[in-house]
Amino acid sequence: MSPEAWLPVSFFLGYLLGSIPFGLVLTKLAGTQDLRSIGSGNIGATNVLRTGRKGLAATTLLCDALKGTVAVVIAGHLGGPNAAMLAALGAFLGHLFPVWLKFKGGKGVAVYIGVLIGLFWPAAVMFCVLWLATAATSRYSSLSSLVASFVTPIFLWWFGHPALAALFAVLTMLLFYMHRENIERLRAGTEGRIGAK
Image (tube, rainbow, N blue to C red; front, top):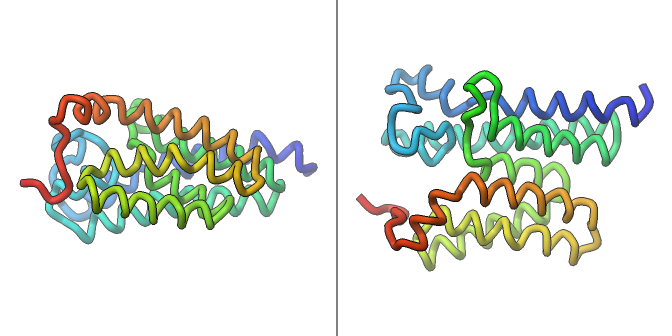
């Protein structure tokens, strides 16, 4: 197949991998209550943490990140950089809007990091360092994700990757949209802090 022929295949592959609801699958295998019935009802690692199973939450975070990385690496190998970027978009959308769960998925932070690892790993390191620094000072997980994702396209553009910067500008807007309720709570001063009971 020509590189152009791999483009739609890569997007579809990314979507299928991204739509695997690891948080839901892992909590069901562990015998906890339905993840969608607790906390935010979200399928991501943050909500898995609300089950009290830290190891399960860490595993969910790792699996959600890796499904983005795997999608990008496979697509890039088969179809080149453009295919890798389409796979990244597909994986992110698949996690946010999985067809298996009536398009109600996670908020996308782990997959965002995962596709960054596959496309330009120094940006993933920057994201994580900025997330940790913001979390340490503010103790808001959501704010940390918003700040780190806001800086990511700027970082990519600064280091000479305009196409990736454009892609992650789109992913950042989607991530902000998925965090719209968190943003309202941050503005109102009612957002829960990391470690708060």
